[in-house]
Length: 467
Image 1 (tube, one colour):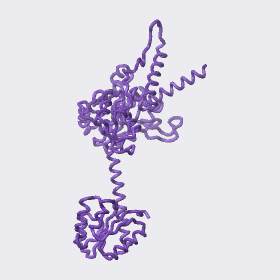
Image 2 (cartoon, one colour):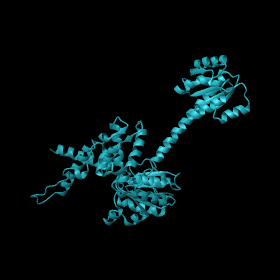
Image 3 (cartoon, one colour):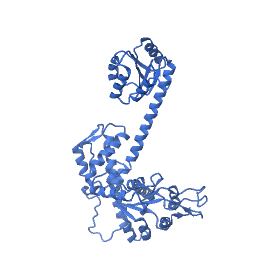
Image 4 (cartoon, helix red, strand yellow):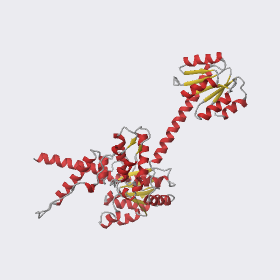
């Protein structure tokens, strides 16, 4: 039975009825405590939790309504069913107003009582599941918040709120790990498109030859391997917002088609002829200055102006150091839930060590660092001993030193390769092989670091075979 082992407290001054209910409910699998009056119930209520209290309304001494008030005052969530031999509507309504879940009129059978219990326990299970769902949704909503009280973050939040009610194209620029996607999600969730889809596209990880098909979709037979029609990201975002992360990585030849979508909100799938019209908002993000890329001839100027209608530049962690305590406490709260830990706190000395580091990987590096601290500590209060060594890049002894004494010519490609390799190996060593943390230390996307590591491994293998 699904309700076996539920704990029941019976309060009834009729000994025969009380004994029968006690025995039959035990046979049905319930854990039962049966007493004759509220005074006898007090010691049990102070020591145990009961899933249901079943109480008579008419008893000598303290009556059931008074007992119900007392129980609800101490624990408003306690489930109570009342029973009475004088079951008038007025008495039942009064009991329900005081918080009783239901009532039974004597005489009643144990089968009727079990049906009431089953109904109540199922209701409580649904209520518990709904509350858990509400907490999960609340947590998800919390994850799209930008936190901070610094002047830099106050300006960002003010700008986001200012443009929330518009449908303007937004360009979010900033270093890796500063929260560009969080800003985009916040703009979407505070806009009139909030009920529509939010489609995030990481342009940096899309294979160059498949960027167009991923963004705009393709028809069956459009190219080798295209066995069926595929809907692109722009089409999926219809009615909502598309977020083009790392838009600076979009190939130059695709930029003209993106420009047309921004201008006309129409496109064709790869291999298709029909025009598809979409209604969406475009938010783009770049880890590099697009204006600098335009000056270098690597990004279309007309596309830049189309994207840069409302610019937002996310501040680095170095520009908002006073926000570190707020972020630390927020991340510790999330980690406590995700890692099934108790309430996590941090001492002032440990916090001071975190505030004395510049966090080149920005908020993302701070988050990953705290997760490592929590995972390696068995205590719920983190102190300075739990803070792993934090080394500024500037403190590393000549990490990229190059001696040019007596050198007349330099093969630049080899020097750059060896320098990059040394820095990546340094970061991997410091992060103990954690790709995400190493990428934060180098201020590059994790996918870029993975690509470079694979490249180094291939070249090392090739070099070994050649010898």
